[in-house]
Length: 79
Image (tube, rainbow, N blue to C red; front, side, top):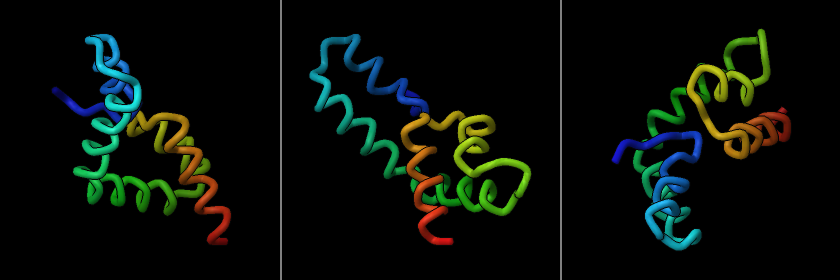
């Protein structure tokens, strides 16, 4: 199964009868597995100044709004 940062994995698994919590845990596991790739995407989006990092992550890397907004919050707290 291909991983989708937008939450497609959990939605797909729920469609096949998985419990919501179990599907979310599977998606989170896949997300953590690609951690180095996600860190690179965050670094790329925080370096550019044309838009907020969260918007960049959603637009260019198809992150889910919840994950992208969490990055925006983290960047604001850091500054």
